Length: 275
Ligand SMILES: Nc1ncnc2c1ncn2[C@@H]1O[C@H](COP(=O)(O)OP(=O)(O)O)[C@@H](O)[C@H]1O
Ligand SMILES: [Mg+2]
Image 1: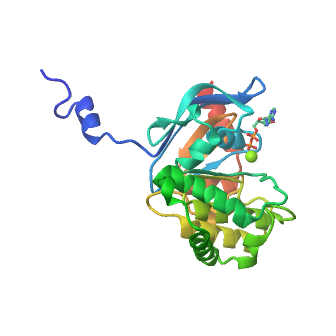
Image 2: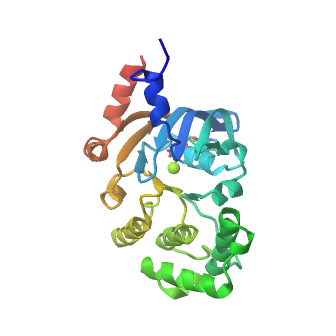
Image 3: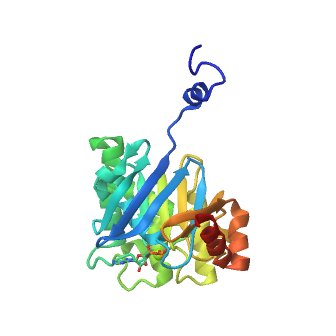
């Protein structure tokens, strides 16, 4: 008997083996010695939009920070594989240079730095790492790319000459994040509560921007407490986080069910399954 040549589990696995774009394996992490994520597993392929939902305090933002490599967070166990490489061993800027993008729930202001200057530094740093030292954009090329992206996102050109996040309204901060994402052309992006603080028009504009940027070669993880942004950015998969674990996963209909019934039924089901 030979192993794994035809029809056996091993044979099939080795024939169809490929590296998913993004994998989280049994991730345990927290802050100041307090465990918040208690065994998270997730697989995201190129071309997929995943939504991560869950009640406040369930650990969604913690997951976003750990993916980004925020230094305050501690990883106790598990791996995060991006293109097959464990990024937990890499500093945040290295992760960004590999094509990961993290938009934060509370972006910080950097006084004295314009959007355009900030974006030029970020874009050229990523381009040099991904394409080669001589692939930085000249000022003229950069301005052309910036104009193209501003137009694509229906943003005014004056936006880029403003100081980064200084005096930005909630909606403008979100737009700035999406512009940053457009410029960096990431292959994997995490949007944490991109809908928070947006009125319905801003929500629509920002979502349309994200949809225009999305392409089958990349993947998105959209983190949200509320279902409403998912009316605009349609996910292929929906996951619900409870107490630092993904309790339920499903298709887009799961988000609608949560909107209707709230999170309590998931909590009840999860408590039953765990006991
Ligand atoms: N800096 C911190 N220090 C201690 N606990 C924190 C800190 N940040 C978040 N937490 C706790 O971690 C848990 C998860 O928070 P968070 O990841 O922000 O959840 P979510 O984004 O789902 O609302 C909460 O109980 C919160 O109180
Ligand atoms: Mg949060």
